[in-house]
Amino acid sequence: MPHDEKPGAAGVDPEQLWLRATEPRRGRKPSFSREAIVVAAVAMADAEGIEAVTMRRVAAQVGAGVMSLYSYAPDKETLLELMVDHVTGELTATDPPSGDWRTDLRTIAHLQRAHMLRHPWLPAALSTRRVPGPNTLAFLEHALAALRPTGLDGAAKLEVFAQLTAFVAGHVAHEITQAAAARSLDRVAAEARYLAAVAADGRHPELAEVLAAPGRPLSAEATFARFLGRLIDGLDAG
Image (cartoon, rainbow, N blue to C red; front, top):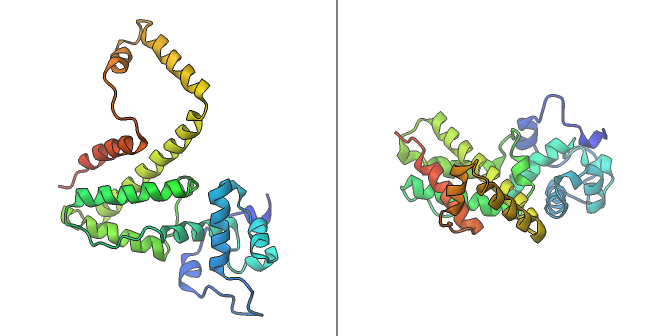
């Protein structure tokens, strides 16, 4: 495995990453910045997927030698932390919470969904533990303020936010997969024929009843809103 693909053995050091200076302290000031590196990596991931992002390719994109990037991001795991927090800066919640926590959670979830659809690599990136950077903490602060009316304790608020984010990430990942599959009209038609045959075989009466029922709105937005409503309505805020 190439050096730039190896995560640090002890994981990412949050103090080193977020609390210390972002520019190298020694030597000549480089012609690029940490932000330029992250912007280049995000653009690459948006266009080609996170697997396409390597330190070598990012270095070439910013016009630098790959070794010069290691003072900013010693491995791809660190770079991914920087990328996640960078794009989270787009999740700006300018309005204060309304006081209706259910409405506010719906707003937060819709913001997250749109955000993840803009950056399709994010759901997978969020599936592993991340060290929250300044942009992530700012959005978390907004979410915690929205949950204040619930009366939940601090740990429960964090759990609710994590549950909501995981739901959105999982749903968006499914949306992306389904959208890719739907591009094949032959496959869609084959799936419809298959389900019709299964429903007619007499061995799946429950499924046959479900398939015969009137359909619901199938737009991605309507489906997400329905699923989200069930999640939020099921949260115990007592």
